Image 1 (cartoon, rainbow, N blue to C red):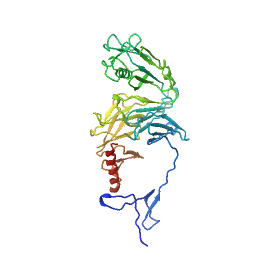
Image 2 (image 1 turned 180 degrees about the vertical axis):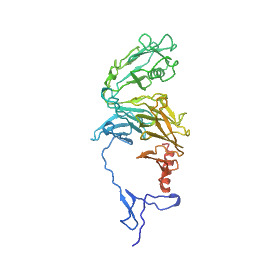
Image 3 (image 1 turned 45 degrees about the horizontal axis):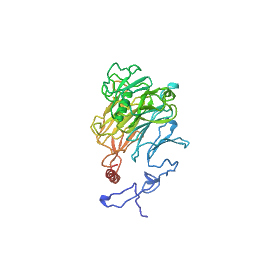
Image 4 (image 1 turned 90 degrees about the vertical axis):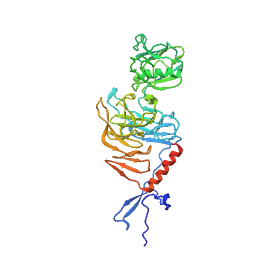
Length: 422
C-alpha cells in the first residue's frame, strides 16, 4: 500500500509557487506505535458558543483568578461588560471611544481586611483613557459653568479661588480665609484645566496655581470637559459621599452639596500625566504598570500606580534603557514584567525600596523587536512575533518556533495592517 504523506501543519509558500496544504482542527504529534509513519494527527476540540456580548467587535477578554470572583471582563465595541461565572452580564460603561483596536486590562486583589481594606480594582487601557472599575465605587461630582475671577470652590477640606492677579498674593493656604489661588483665564476650558491641575498638583506651581499648593486629600480629578470638571473621592466606598462640594459664584455650580454615588459599583477615569492615553496595563507585585502611547519624547516610558492607590503620580515613571525604541505593551511574569518594543525586549522588577522602587534586570535584554500587539505570556515563557514575521519563545533564551511558511503568512498580515493604518 502506498504511503501517503500527511501535512503536519498549514503550509503555504507563494514565493515558491507550491501547493497549499491545510490542516483544519488537527495538531501533529509523534506516535511510535499506531501507524507506520510513527505520527498522528489529533483532532482539536471545537469551541462552544456561550454568550453573545454587545454589538462587537470583541476587542478584549480578561479574567484574573482571585479577583472579582473570577468574573470575565469583555470589551465589545465601545462597551465594557462584566460577566459572572453564572452568565449574568452587567454593562459597566458604554462610553469608550470608538475603535477596533485591542484593549488591555489588569485586575488587582483586595489589600488588607475589615473596614479599612482596599477593594479590588479593574483597569482598562483603550489607547485614549485609563478606566477604573470597582464594586465599592467612588463618589463623584461635577462642577460646571463659566468661572469668574473671585469665585471660590470648596472640595472637602480645601478651598480654591480663581484670580486674575498673582497666584501667590497674600498667604494662600487652602483655608476658607486664605484659599489656594488658581489662575483665571478668559478661556473657560483653560480655567477649568487650572482647577483640575490644582486638585492633583499637576500643571506648573506658581503659574497655574499657588506655589505652596498641595494635593487635595479628599478628591481627585476624573475628567475635564470644555465647561466642566468631574471629580471623584480619593477613597472608594460610602465614605466619599461625605466630601463637601460648594461654590460661591453666579456662573458655576455643583449638582449637589457633596459627592454622591459612593459604595455602588461604578466606573471612573484615572487622570494620566499630560493627558497621554495609555495603551497597556499590567499587575505586578501589587503595583499596576501603565504604558502610555509612545512617541513625542516618551518612547520607552512607563508609569506605575502604587499598591492600594488609584492615581498616577507624574514622578512615578521610568524609561526602558537598552534602546530608545517605543514600547508596545507590558507582559507580566510572576514578580517581573517585560517591556517588548520595536527593537528590544527588557525585563524589569519592583524592588520594594522606596528610593528606587523599580529596576531593570541586568543582563537580560533581547535585541529583537516585536510586532505591536503580538507579545503574550504562555505559562513560564513569552511568545513574540517580530517585524519579519518570525515567532520566538523567550524562556531563559530565545528560541524560534515558527517555520518559513508561517512567517510568510504573518508578513502578509503585517503588510496588510500597515496598509490600512491599523
